[in-house]
Image (cartoon, rainbow, N blue to C red; front, side):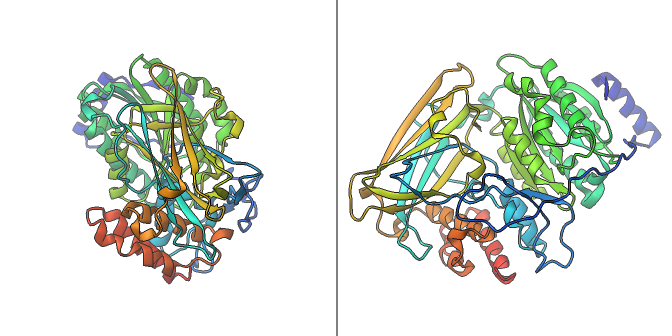
Length: 520
């Protein structure tokens, strides 16, 4: 492990010399073998959520003559319907990841159906903008809406739980120290992955304030501190350091992350945001290679408030499992960048606007009234489940939410005949990141609040329903075995005209059409 760092002054001298000599340095490390774990068999999703998830690799062999090599996903099962007489509580940690949707988009654009195990319904839904009103006070506002489900043979109802986090004006957010942990191993040379990383980070640096600070750690066969935390006022210096990166060597993610956390800890200050941003294809083949073993080395830094966002690049030799679980355990979020437009969305629109955490260990518990609701099913969040009895256990780790984030969860319901009354009460519990105080809010939805037709719901409700069904079909959900892309298109296509200022809607319709053309 190299702990020697280049100071800003030294980097400036080096860069000046490089400009005069017309050459640029490169990082080239010796390769130490792949060490990539063999894939376990993949199984079709069942009605019951699985206790022991399995790994799977690649895309759809039926439509792709050369499936992506060494692509790792994890199957978390599919939530079943639960009778309220058996369990009337549904509890999960908030999640604002979006990577699963953009991974699927990459598959479909390349002419492949996505691996079912790559599909996480909540990340599909949470990719899309919402129009939830801002909270009047506190960190969150709860918005509830219900209607008949537009999908399925039985008469199911759909309930949407929408949570809107308070926005913080960019001028009012806290100053930030960002540590870029950049994978420069040989695999990052494929598809010019490192090139897209560099362009992405340039976008982010351009959005920073002079009072923000940036440090850079790189890793191939070993880790190295390239740039000590440097004021964003020295923007050209930071950008030049990014531009000088070259790929080569094996992949020691553990060493890179450990160096990144140590660098961040040295710059940790009260009242200041401190975050690692890992840019990688998720491959780790030197040192500890699993998310649990890697995070075990740095959990003290996480407890100190240093968060970790992971951003994935590339397809083929890509480990979604590592990237997603690192973000979950690192109290951050996980994105996947497949284009420069997506880089702009992640690094400019999302990351800089949501840097400041407004809620720690944020959990949701929905209490269904057994006299009104016979059974329910949560769409997605299979790997974000929290034990019902742990909802008010404030020592249990849950989700972290940044300023302005929205979180959406959809439930399918079966009612008890025509019974009236409160159908569900939604509780949200979280810790204020500044005061440390725990807050809890709630809101109820009555049976009478459900509108009689899906056409009477908001356009965003209908979009969420279509996106969730799309994901359910793609992941071979037992509960969508009779679902069709034609039905998804019937609901989604008119929304292009209803939401003309949102290009994501038109793109979604195109992706549904591609999946349909591929035989789904």
